Image (cartoon, rainbow, N blue to C red):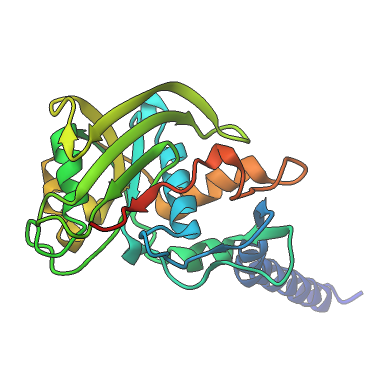
Length: 269
């Protein structure tokens, strides 16, 4: 027996095995990751903004970010605010439903993948953040309605002067780690008729790291205190969808527990 040839042949075999293994650990793993199912949705979640400034995809992302930062070690968030510019594409839209959402769909929805930051704002600061949604207030150059998380809502009047368009603000604390979401606290009326009821009361608010630095002319967010950095935007959505992964119930944007609509443009005058 020619041991030299046998050794050479064995080496080729091992090398071939290594090449196959390497291929699996690179391309195939990436393919598997992009096809991994994170959760199931019962209906389309389009990234289409209505006349009030709200979109199903924006609500969904805000809820994911709130859920990801509600725990004490994640920031104890009560509200999440999402800038519309951080969303991309058509949203989570499929040809049929229920639809299993995969990783590549999540990354396409928020391709930047910024880290989340939870900060402390007073009611006065929170109202000013919302006022900065409208051109002419605090250096804002265009209308940028923020998407808001489950339990938080506000109304606005287009005819009012700069920095005084926000009419009502309300917070109902919601626990989003369950399906469906559950109410976890009393209703907190923050403002009514454009007047803050307790300007110095503080709230823990989650935004992405760019907003926390004042991006999109939301300069007041730079004054937020006690920042806690959390998951990325993509990881927050992936974690949120796990609540709605088969055989658990699918995500249904239409159920009452989603507390929609959350934003209201009040009629004239």
